[in-house]
Amino acid sequence: MAMLENNAWYTSSGLDIDPQQTQEPVEKIKVIINSIVGDFVSYNSKNNSLTFRVDKDLFFRIISEKFGTAVISYKNESSTIEWNDYNYSVRTDTETITITVEEKQNE
Image (cartoon, rainbow, N blue to C red; front, side, top):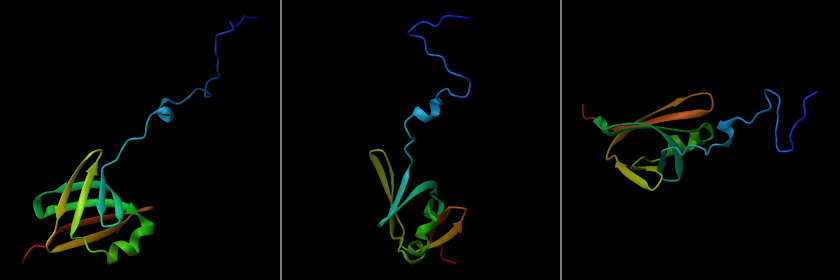
């Protein structure tokens, strides 16, 4: 039988610590429109198109919200997007809603 030294730590396979569990959470880019805060998905300068995700619980607030301006925020930096006249679309996933707001185009 082998002798273990006093300062040795042995563990069975599968009981070791996952290094991803000890890492800091990744800070996400946020989109803020009035009191609604969501996660940034994409931005396209053509039509000033902004896409972001929010929890499904916010559905009725989203469809009644005015989207005049949005703030995109990451760490200590932010940028403001403004729409004078806009269209928006709402798509649903399992637990989130994806919203796209863009400048309305004259036809």
